[in-house]
Image (tube, rainbow, N blue to C red; front, side, top):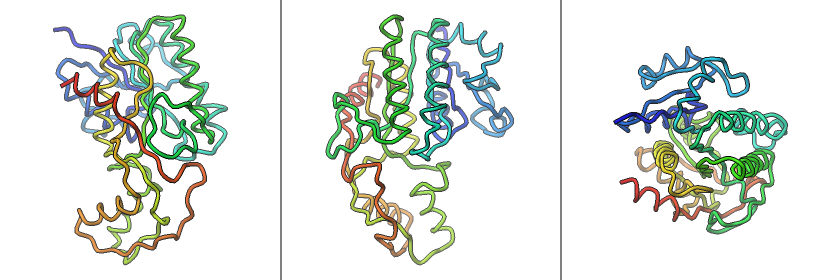
Length: 287
């Protein structure tokens, strides 16, 4: 059986490394990874048998373009500057860098494109969020992502390709940004701090470990029966306080929570989680 060739952008990033590992579990996949830092890729054990292309989505080199002609599917993860959600460069630069990249590969004949979005596209809406809900982004990052989706949907009206927009919710795991909640908690555990500063913890969120997120991305990307927006989430709300308490309990750590130290973020609602009905259909059909 001929192997499917899958290209991943942002391959050495937090999510990208796990997506690569998820693809490597598939026996019929040949992986191509775009990275701006081949030295970093070479230092990663899971990248030793990959086709690594040192380039970026803005300035694609000749080798990358030659390979694209034979690619069966693209998983586009690359996006700079996170988690600075309010910065204007998401709209001024990242949006157009990603759009131009997607348009270029579509023009080259790519028939299967998956791009990651964000739950922030839904805006300040509380409750369970289905994919059919109208998007109302209220920060620069979410506006840029939502605009990119709409731009690619317009391209799909004139070009024949399978397009999946995979909306990510909250994730955690090794390699996450140092200023993320669990990374800060891990640092506090290592330091053996007596207390941990956090918000009031009453927010309801939808969490998945990044390895599960990555496997969901792989499953959504390789299939073509269910296109469009797909929530990548657990579908199970949990308070941030309970999530932190469970995390400490699993690690047998006794640490006081200094609740209310930080204010609640003004760019996200207090209580929201995803409807994962579409995702479950995809996972059931892939098993």
